[in-house]
Length: 194
Image (spheres, rainbow, N blue to C red):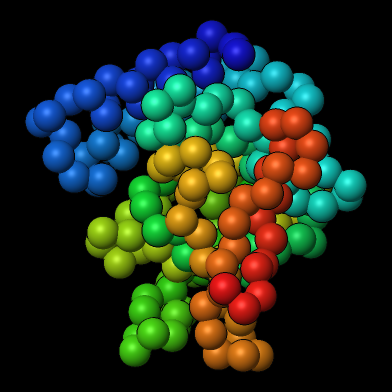
């Protein structure tokens, strides 16, 4: 843990304990200053947290709440990689640490995610995932140059985070759980037939 990461974790704990912050948006807004401070810090995350896994995307675990309410990942996308269209079933706050990201957001139309917007995020930007406001479906892609690293504060534990993948060929949503592929390193994998 770094000092900036400790401050972010303390801000998440405080936001989740504050009864006045009674919506996901209110909690996300409360976390924004701590996320911005982490992104501006000279030592935001340990250097090894910025490493991909076997040349591909990975979520490197930075903190897991002991009560399972949330976790913090350094998500690494090498240049040219994409997440595919997927859904987060509960809140998240994302800060862009290194490189950039092209994000497409989708709205649900009769059970099908349909692209609603597209935005390019840059180092220092902060955004939210707010399924309670219809903002759970998205796709991220690193167009380069270089490896993109973002810090994600996501609801629940990595193993319990509600995550779905849109199978365009099959026209269906599939389970897309985070799987620990090495200690503290999590990759989302499609679970066919579930």
